[in-house]
Image 1: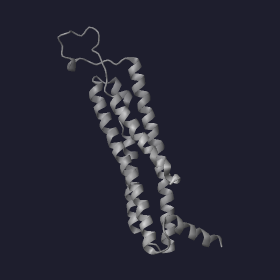
Image 2: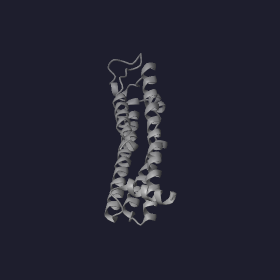
Image 3: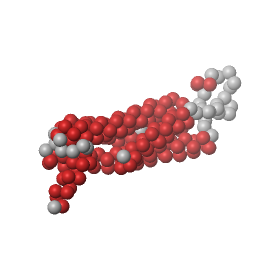
Image 4: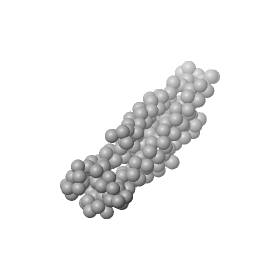
Length: 188
């Protein structure tokens, strides 16, 4: 269980994204010289330097955490893929687990694509209406968050399917014992 404890970092990442989403609720004021009668929605919004800096830093922290999470997920996928190969060589039917792992790889690629296409917080801050610009950034972050959850669920499902396949084949009581048996045969 401790081997996959870093999957729990997904919860931390999701909470950081939630903080960023709530932080994009911007407190802004109309620029000086704007008539008092002019509706607030049509006035250009100016953000203070401190707010701009905080939003940019938070956005960059979330992006760095997403990238780190993707790297951890790719590492886990590689290890699970290696186990699937070893179990297949041992005669265990791992087709369902392999298909689920491929879906998980597709979700990782989707997250990477969304991350590359993520709108810049700097662009949103400097736009005429930051509130509307951050609505787009918020939507993109929500998609990334949902995709990361799908990756996490896919990995859990894949491991469950592998355990069931090993138990069904009668080679042991789980993936660990099947892989250990293969490794023991190689060393003898």
